Image (tube, rainbow, N blue to C red; front, side):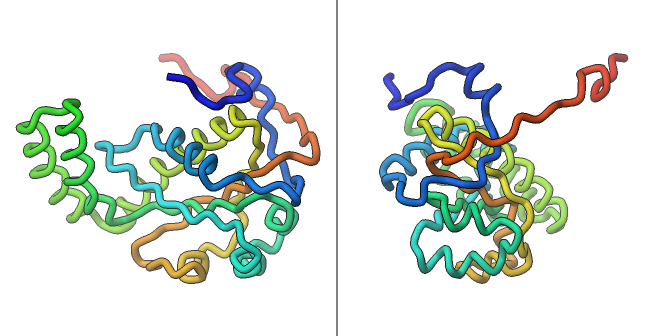
Length: 212
């Protein structure tokens, strides 16, 4: 299978990723290309494959005007990027369980009896979990999706900036989502970089790890 990657060098993608805050504001990523990147990123793993990530692609002037007051310290990204990607975790992701597992069966990736057993076990469990527990699950899974999307974007020749500084209590409602169902995880700006970004350092393995 061929991919429209402009960069297929894994180490370059990994080592040279930067958090870009200023983009070419005249450049807009085509919708088909954005959808292709989202599809690639959605190959990320998730708990029992519930894929709880949900996204609002904010690319219009009207959408960015709505977002601007909610990201007071990140307006450069909003004003210059091709799009701002609002990533949410769906607390009711289990409602898609049957669709997901039916597709797995139809594509011969899962036997019917396994699907039935999974649905009978997982859906009632997820329905019974406290909100704070479900929130942790969907945030972790959606963060895996977000990281994968950042790397996919670089393979397509774009750059990103993960943003955690925003009005989380207002984001869902501002974009007509149910705030009781959709938990804000992060915002990603994406576009053609107009700056190189800054190199940064990382703690050594012996600092962040223990062997027992």
